[in-house]
Length: 396
Ligand code: CTP
Image 1: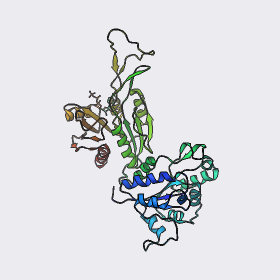
Image 2: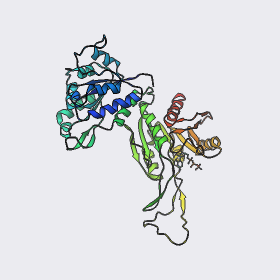
Image 3: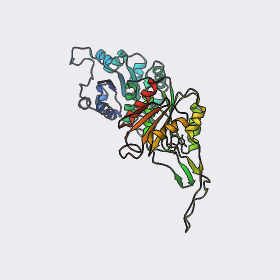
């Protein structure tokens, strides 16, 4: 990402103003230049000084305050913004912008900007569902303004329903995705599979593996940030649902296969980062298996090799596999690339203590079908994902 991207953060007067402090703080930690504009009512909830300290910039509250620089402020901030975020956005600011009213610093600056404007509405459910508010939202969406849907839950007023400001991480994820410097996957459909699969044994027991899903989730987020429509087929993991990605939760090998096949024909890139079980119990006991005095043996039968099936059905898709190996890493990975008719395979050595399963980092080699091998140094999984798509997109 280029240095010093600028987010203008418009803060309007709702109880969720306190969450905007976290948003400003997270953006600052990511080296974003944060410029805060508060409406008068927002200043009733939190003092501008707090935003000033967090953003390390002067906070604008008033159209006619003493200029701190020889610039017309609403114009300079409008031009400076790479993304314009309004969080929390009240019914009032949405209504004003939808109807061309510019009567304070925030509404005039929104009116003057060419940057992408993202509203994160937060208000009482009744207000949010009001047809006038909904009409304003629709009108703005048609004009290219974006919205982060409010969450449902117990609201500050005691009502239960839709209207809560989503968690600051979600809002920051959306903003950072908008700011991402590479947008070479726009109009592309990417399917990613991540995490482990499970094989049931009886109603209380299953077999699974050590995959945490981290690598696959980073690949899905990278594709989203580059502009792709992303479908993430995920085995059971503790990873947070990423913003703006269609997540299909699956448990078994068969569920994973079906979810991918349903979307395969019109996919452009398919990345199989999941650790899929190769065997399933010959019979899943319908009752809990009781202990006996002796040992227990269970029979397992081969399950689908999903990637092999995808390789056979491949038309124009770019198919990427992973190879988790403990010996002869490159040789074994090359064998899988050929057998499964892949375009790329990402190979890693699972015996390495500081990378791989559960770690933030990975040390991989990417092998392409024409035999090129690129060995990357140890890096975090987000960077591995970025390198993978760089390679795929450069070689097309
Ligand atoms: N894979 C799959 N279906 C399986 C097993 C693996 O789709 N039943 C995919 C994985 O998602 C990964 C790649 O195949 O992209 C390699 O997985 P790996 O388990 O390392 O390879 P296997 O073919 O199972 O070979 P082996 O277990 O013998 O190492």
